[in-house]
Length: 316
Image (cartoon, rainbow, N blue to C red; front, side):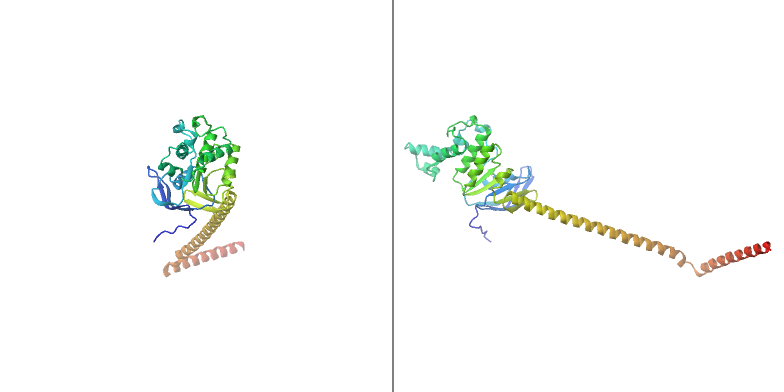
């Protein structure tokens, strides 16, 4: 039967599994639907949050399952700088060098038909980049500034600006505040508050997660989805934990009660068995043996009476 996708869906993961080359399975049969509701992805370190973000963005492919993307997805990685960035410019780090170069050729009258495809609808990209750099506190940077002259926080902001200007329908940001100072984090929160596309944020930053309207928790058992922001998620999760603890405590109490009942039943059986054994020691004697026992008892009684008579005579 054909799969039906809700009209509001931006990206849908269907029965996604991911295994490393070593054979270790990270995800197994995950399902997730993302729309325009701002979504935070949380979970313990090492559980696979960044890998899930890369799967959503198409940076890596699943081992099995399928992913439907109905919009362009822009991805900002957790680590914006590595050795390959040393000779890159601000435009290249932002991923905007191709459309900016096409716009420059168009302005110089040397553009070809391929440049129009690269530019798309971003005719004002040069001006928008300038505005975005200024708003992020990077007014001293130009598109051709070398990345090696930038700090980690500046590089992080340039990477985020590139994602924001990528003409995407869905932003996927992996730990976007890791290299940002307080001013940078405030800039990012304000910028995302005005974002009108879909948004997925992998983060430990509670102030940023407070802006989300849905939280997806990644656990070793799979994904759990909670409506509301991070505070709402914590309230719901804590309530679930308390309910689980209550169920566990009740089960433990019932197990202890059952163990005590079994012990009492065992003790009762043991007492009955002991009484039965004592009865069996005499109940199974033959009639002759029983008569012999009676005779011995009578002799004992007679001997006792003789001793009593002699004792009385001596007294007289």
